[in-house]
Image: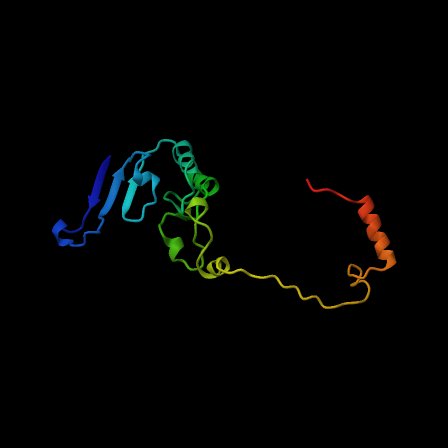
Length: 173
């Protein structure tokens, strides 16, 4: 693997011990930590591929669903972009940019599967954190035809219900 670290200043100018410089890793092993764990930092693994369907799409599908999927390529008439849109399940998708789906308050943000559940931001966050209760307040209408399906049933309705249940019963699969 070729590891390139980009530092716009001298090493001794940076006193912070927890600092991670911008790092590009060329063709890391598929079982390396950078390819199996989530990356939160300025680390970019770059893989070479020859066939988009088998080398990229199938590889992504074979792993846990990602929190976000970023695709860079032509916008118009692009079969690879269509494959990403239709085949990959991810919490969010961004084409030709990064992180814009997080900063846009009108888009939901959240994961799928192992990357998290639920959506957050604006109304989506409100709905995810709410537990709405359904309440139906029916106006008491004690006259025909509104009372036809309410107790107490007349003898005529009891006979119709009994007949319906006798001849039109069904069982669930």
